[in-house]
Image 1 (cartoon, helix red, strand yellow):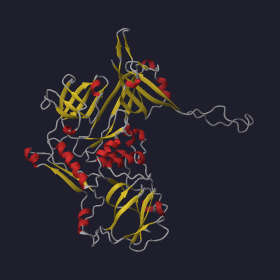
Image 2 (tube, helix red, strand yellow; image 1 turned 45 degrees about the vertical axis):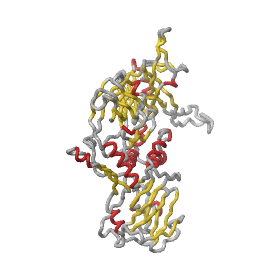
Image 3 (cartoon, helix red, strand yellow; image 1 turned 180 degrees about the vertical axis):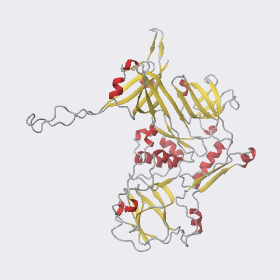
Image 4 (cartoon, helix red, strand yellow; image 1 turned 135 degrees about the horizontal axis):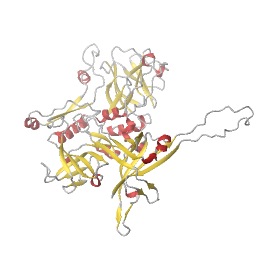
Length: 540
């Protein structure tokens, strides 16, 4: 007999005694109050849907009426923006109001919730179901709860996964407008710029229009080249200084100040044309990641202050499989959320950020099912309750005959005219006139085989290398340059829990193309507590 347990952390808020003015002479001067404050305390609620007592005799009473409704999936669309999130509902029975006291005095908002699944064994001698040890129970969900939602005889809790941490804006410093590195009145209240990784032709923020001071980033950075109107020879570097304001630079030069608190440049002469730079940005901690997933990891734990425990242990292995140099620049003109950061850095890469069952975040690469590796499981008719076709996104069906992946994104588009220096080279003018350089995968056979094959627009990415962009384009071509099918496969929950998103499987089912077995990839799952089955979405 299968069952699930729920553990919910709750808090009894701190109790602070109100200030009082005792009568003069009522207590000695300086005496401590006889009504001390009570600090916040944490408790753990334990419930189950079938009753459970673990090996240490801790009981999980059967108050769970709906253990979990949950949907997770990988991103399947031509823009491949890299975001995939889940949400669920937990419902507890509240007969005769036994939970009313908890609802009124305890807080559960955004506190950990853990759901596990186990199997009770039948003891024929004693004619009872035996509870398993807690160590053999499998995780189904780990995340956060969001406030009590009381009903007539029940209470529901909305479940949030680790992506909740990505909803807020990235913390950043704000210019105070007091002068110097704090900026003048023109930037008062604006967020400081942030540069992470390698970028091309960004416009630094002019923070002191009197002394021609620009800020590149809120952390250390290396300036590879400075351009005035696209020309790199007009303003030359005079080196690095510890204080930009100590000595004014010579005309025609610029100096750099870079430390853990930011990177700035100061020009010795008022520029005639716009100032842009090619640069590489690091982190305040001194970390200098290059790969796109390494940069994203550092942003999550350092810039977004995501607790490291929410990062999956397999992250490093995934990053090593995608050694793509990348970078991005946020100029501070608007707030940026964690979800936007993930979408920006993973755009076009075929990578989805997925919350795992253990409550961690893990990037998963969408691959050609035939190249997915050793099958995690074979799904045969004896375990498949039902199977039905699911429509692919219109951007992927019919197949695509061409993929255009952008690289070395140009953050400041400059076309010929008064905004370009007359000495700017032809190569530079050509580079900065377009938003992105392009790597292409194409197959004319696909184009001729379909009357209206898909042809996605150029996808802007954070990639810095043509070689990497070409590799990504080839991966998309191998995956979507042929007809693909999605199947909704209903299997017992005991089978589904053995699989996770991104796992390769062998699908054997009486449907076209799969009767003899076909390689597939688990790209989605839907769990309903009212059913003993789980619906897996398989891409073949």
